[in-house]
Image (tube, helix red, strand yellow):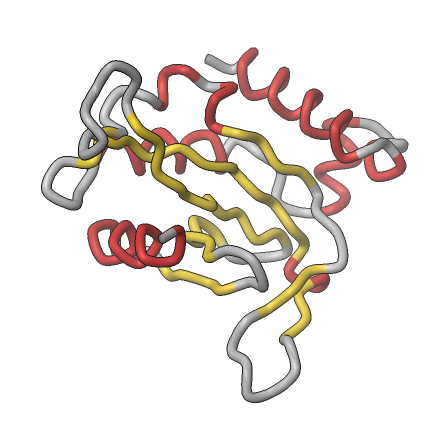
Length: 154
C-alpha cells in the first residue's frame, strides 16, 4: 500500500522514487544529502474509510551512506539516518493532504519541499548549524532538534 501511494504521488509530482527495504521515498533533493518524503495514508478523523490523507516522514540521509541491496534487487539500504521528522510535527502540512481521486493538492508538495530545502545540504553545514556533537546524539534527539529548527523558521 505504501509503495503504491509513493508511486501515485511520484506520477503527480514528477519526483523520483527510490526504493528501500521497507519503504519507498519521494526524492525532493539529491546531493551530498538525499532529502526524501516517505508517505503513507491515514484515515481522516470522522470521515468514511475512503476519506484519506497523506502523512509521512521527512527523511535525510547522506548519499554516501546508501548501499544497494544484493542483486537482482533494485532497492537500497542506508547505514544511518541524518534525521527524520514525522509530518505530524508540522500541522500546516495537513491542508491539501487529502487524497481526492488519487491525488493531493499540488501545494502539498511545495510545503514538503520548503521544509526539506530549509535543512543543510552537507555534513559540514549540519555541524555548523546544529553543533559538533549533532551526529553523536540519538536519532530522537536529532529529530527533536531539527523539528525545533524548522518550526522556528515558520
